[in-house]
Amino acid sequence: TARIIDGKARAAALRADVAGHVTHFAARIGRAPGLAVVLVGEDPASGVYVRSKGKATREAGMVSVERRLPADIDEWALLELVSELNADPAIDGILVQLPLPSQIDAQAVIGAIDPAKDVDGFHPVNAGRLATGLPALVPCTPLGCLMLLREAYDGKLAGLDAVVVGRSNIVGKPMAQLLLGDSCTVTIAHSRTRDVAARVRSADIVIAAVGIPHFIAGDWIKPGATVIDVGINRLPDGRLVGDVDYAAAVEVAGAITPVPGGVGPMTIACLLRNTLVAACRREGLPEPDGL
Ligand code: NAD
Figure 1 (tube, rainbow, N blue to C red):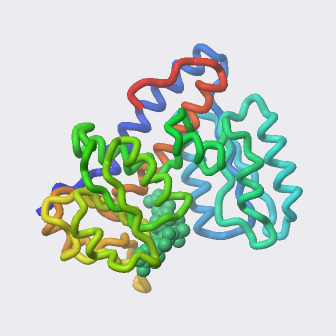
Figure 2: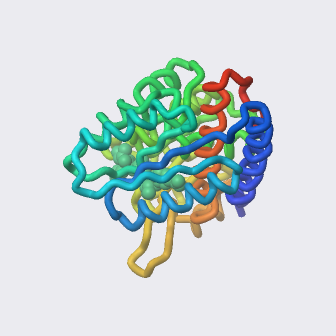
């Protein structure tokens, strides 16, 4: 059976590394890095995410600023807040929690964030920098997946066949760019792909980012492959499951991430990492190494 990739432990180690760098940053600059999280409306799931991001930020020794706006706010008021945070010298990272209410154009809001403070990595400038191999702020979830993969393969990803199932701007597309950057041969499968199973069967690395429970069947997995399950799906009985049929896949795969306890904890740890990196770049400090 597969080796279980312990995202929780890897994330805890990354958070400890970030906290160490934060101490040095504060000693040199005279302040801690600051992350502002903006929440529009009362969506309970978003509220949970925002609270846990704030807690993790403080635990890493950074300053957490939480700004809440009512659900019926109009777009210019949110843009106004973003430009206020762009101009605030104590703020190194800005994250606008998605999804936004329908009267607000999310792309316009993301495009208004200073790319140097865009710790989610969703700004077109950061997406373009990632795609062209320039230093960028990289979306947290795919970055966390890449870290788990690099560790699983001891950094030797070159030439491996990877399939990414899902093509969102948040997960699938940046994941494919990162794998390409590490010289994998990358296939992106999506809702219009004719035979997803055949693509997955030929892959050494499978990234599942679909949002459908048990979408990836166990017998799609090539024996020995590494399976990274990004999906977070709540079943009617309340259980959280990924996009992969875990019970079946764990018998075939070489290594696999569980849900929960795989990719999820890495996402928040990478947000802290991105905030530290953004702060160092803004202050002209060298990139924190080992992150
Ligand atoms: P999304 O809905 O934006 O994208 C889903 C993708 O799946 C689409 O690109 C679509 O083409 C593809 N897809 C849909 N049906 C398909 C089918 N039948 N065959 C092949 N492809 C199909 O979702 P997202 O934001 O990319 O998130 C994907 C999943 O990852 C969700 O479950 C989400 O909750 C989870 N997620 C987890 C984290 C984390 O921290 N672990 C972060 C972000 C998203």
